[in-house]
Amino acid sequence: MSSSAINFRGLQSANRRKTFGLLAGMGLLVWAVVYAAMTYLGKSTTMIVPVAVGFALISVWGSYYFSDSLVMTMTGARIIEREDNPALFNLVEEVCLAAGLKLPKVAIVEDSAPNAFATGRNPDHAVIAFTTRILQVMDRDELQGVIAHEMSHVANRDTLVSAVAATTAGAIAILSDILMRMMIFGGMSDRDDREENQNPIALVISLVVLILAPLAAVLLKSAISRKRESLADATAVAFTRNPAGLRRALEVLQSDTTVVAQKSNAVAHIWIESPLDGKSVSKLFSTHPPLEERIAILRNMEANPIA
Amino acid sequence: MKSTIILIAVLVLLVLWVVTSYNRLVRLNISADEAFAQIEVQLKRRADLIPNLVETVKGYAAHEKTTLDAVISARAKATSATGIADVAAADGQLTTALRGLLAVAESYPDLKASANFLALQEELSTTENKVSFARQFYNDTVRSLNQAVKSFPSSLFAGMAKVSARAFYEVENPTDRNVPNVKF
Image 1 (cartoon, chains in turn green, blue):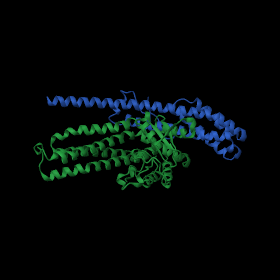
Image 2 (tube, one colour):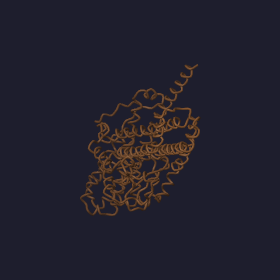
Image 3 (cartoon, chains in turn yellow, orange):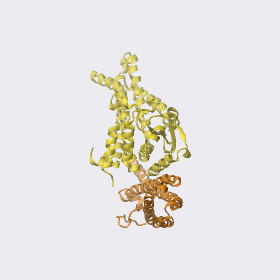
Image 4 (cartoon, chains in turn red, cyan):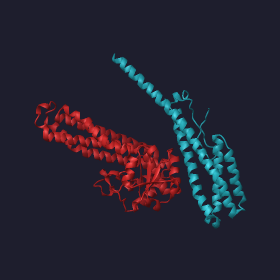
């Protein structure tokens, strides 16, 4: 890590740059799939691109637009009012002042694992939720760090970013699925239609691209999610200027081995500590960077405070 | 023909760029106003808490007169201050006076254990945090604003948008810190 990236401003711009690069990578992947399809099956296959993108958009858009109510239902979160927990509302208000954001809805999830999440399509529809356990095990500074991390997701529009990533990954999956079927069932019969490249090497490469593209898309999507988590950690420090609070909160999560009861894949990525990453085959498929790495970066920020 | 299209495209991009830069300056200027208003809201909240705090402390530590008077006079100054430099200076004094009062409270176990004081403590700590976060957000906004006003090429539109660089909200010794020169 270069010295300029140690403080939160450097980390914020580095993570934004990397997200942009990864999203561009997704775009490039779509292009590669389309190109491979044209090579293998002829120019007429470009017709199915809008179909695939359309299907992906329809399936993702709803979960993006209604993310607040959907996620609440899926996690069993219940909205609370100020009088239910004034001290928690004080903390949320503090972080909102630091972030210049509107006060989100605050929700509670009855769960014996400490965790928290934020969702909502924009800051006006933001919801921030805490499990009952996290409110018991964390002190004021630690909770402030957690809230700052979650409000960073709101400020950085991460629901939108992950919706874009999910749409592109979905479109690539649909696209390669249709194309593989076309190859197996229809591709061989109408060879006259294949006006393009007949070079066997090009055909093999195209086939490999089509087979590997969905996997590559999932890897890119996970990488984007990890970058947004790192960005949220850095932005949280920009809000509270107290890396120690979030660092200690992550240490609490690290020492705790319980995981939230809702282990649904669909909402695993929104929690501050992923309920699924522990089981991932590889770091490459994780939606969050390893806790040790996040803690180390925060420690580094503590040692190098910004003026 | 082709060159006309390119010319038009360049002109459109140029206009778009001017509009965006101009709007950004205006937006930052409004944000800075809002951020300053937010500091005042939080300072008012804190000022409203103080009479209650002073009464509570008096009940247990009436002879800590100097500390109590310091808080009361700092509050009076803070509520009457106008203009960013004065508000910030009075805010700083009140923060110091409050810290003194809370330090004094440490040596009165009865006071520390009283229900009234315990209830006030959470209110006081969240209010202190809110005041300082509001200051920080204002200063961050001013930082972006000043950067936009002073750096080329957005500096070209600062005059047109009637936006100028602003002073930071500096609580500690605003005089001996190098405050940027501001002309309105």
